[in-house]
Length: 301
Ligand SMILES: [Zn+2]
Image (cartoon, rainbow, N blue to C red; front, top):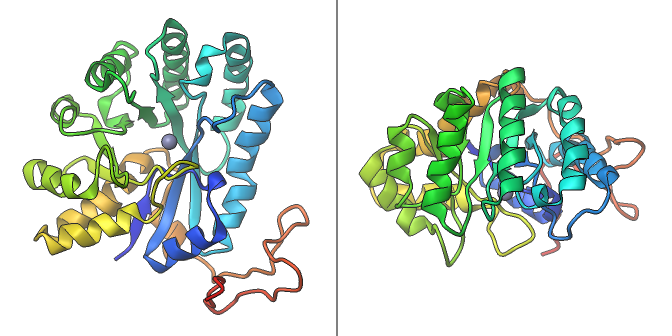
């Protein structure tokens, strides 16, 4: 079975993650622009980060046989640094127009402040203008209220709910999101929040229509194999292969495919891995390693 992880921050992950993801059947991923843990103090840091999402990280993924796409946006947390936020907003139109950018994201609310609201709205207008899907980060605190508010603001800005992927749902938010016609994405975290046991129950209750899952793996405790592992658990618990395909592959493809930048043919007709390739003169090989052209494992066992 092929999988898509439509929310994963590979910038924070390792080459062995890429290898394990490929081995588990992940063919394509979307990396949303987000907060790096260390708050940025310069606009140039955003510029270089956005450039790496469409440049270096895409190249790095390709060296492990995975197609990499991204969404570009100003994250809600750093929207609270208004002086910086103004400059980042000005730079966004340039980046959302780049090849392989499948949406504006991840944007929305963190603490639900006025500044977050202002920059969320500005970015919704941008998404509408360039006709790209919106990937919404819903807050971890006051989740239900924040999720509903996010959707209401989208509607106010004349955005079609079918163009909006609302992320980090749980049992309390899913019904509202589906009833209003938005896509409901779920982040599967190990140990806490939305675990995969709970996800199985959500799919049993709500079915597979407009529901997708992701790992949101980043620099925190998270699992880059959350999508294939949850698929395996769904299978074990009697969910049909078609429902699993919808939740772990097709719905991500259909929703972000509306960008015109996310096509199945990209990975179905892909060329074999060639690790002798270089990006701006750099390759992923270290100290005399030879290029992998035959699926050899890079992990020292
Ligand atoms: Zn994220």
